[in-house]
Length: 121
Image (cartoon, rainbow, N blue to C red):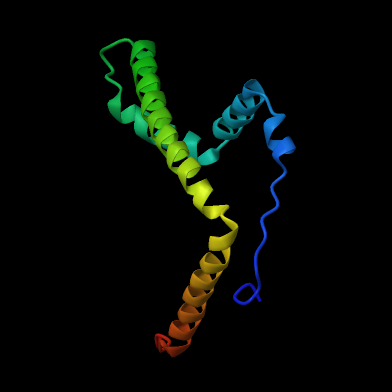
C-alpha cells in the first residue's frame, strides 16, 4: 500500500523543542551506561591494554578518556550527517519516490528469496 499511496510527514515540533540539553544528556548517558554490550565490550577490551606493573587507575582513566573522545567524535559526525539527511527525508515531494524505491527493493528481495533453492541438509 505504501508503494502507491502518497505519504505525509507529521512532526510535532513542540514535542522535540521542549526537551532541555541536560535532560537529553542524562537520558543518553543512562541508556549508554546500562547497555550490556558496552559493559561486555569494556570488560573484554580494557584488560588487554592494562599493564600490571603500572598503576591501575591512571591507565583506566586514559583508556576511558580516549574512548569518550573517539566515541564523541564519531557521534558528532553521525549527527551532522543525520541533520543533512533529515532535510532530504522530510521533503514531501521526494517521500513518494523514496517509498517507491524502497517498495521496489522489498518486492525484488521477496522475488529473489522465492527463487533461491533451499539448502539440502
